[in-house]
Image (cartoon, rainbow, N blue to C red):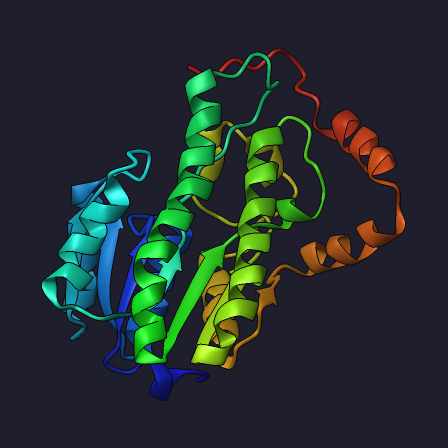
Length: 268
């Protein structure tokens, strides 16, 4: 298994760890011998996962925090590096989306996507990466999406935030490689999780989903070997390749027709 010796005994911080890809990443890193700090909004979910992994011998701690709050990254940092826990593996996984017409979606939901998917990623990376540079080692996994390869009408803000995540990961990877730090952008396609229900985006589940465990394993494997981008879904890899050869306007018009809500979608 790739990366077992690298991650053995290292502290990994995973955001959005209460469910979905985040929980799967936690289980995968646990199997590779990492010690875990799990953070998310839902204490009960975190405690349940911590108990599960603790029963398998993994040292696990939780930090309850809502990354929609700009103060949350500093709170997480204070509970980890500030408490003399050296974080060698930072997993920026927390994220949210919204399906529906932009002009009808709640404004706060659109802005929350920017805060959690973009701002929190920058804040957390800015807090933890300098310590990795000082130690001359570290790994950063940023969960982007196959949505980052083309505009997605009716998930307009979500797709735009994931472009940010992917480009941020690629730029940061080039900067910090000289310090022995690996940065990987994990770009899943549709993955079985609560994301679709929370985002009101069940239309994407209809196109087939990939198990979270498979996405997590492939993502951590890529991080361990220093691969800068990983698209774990075959259809996603094919799409990312094909969109290079078609005008963006043509792609966007096609997707608008495919994804247009059958009736107005207003999230509450």
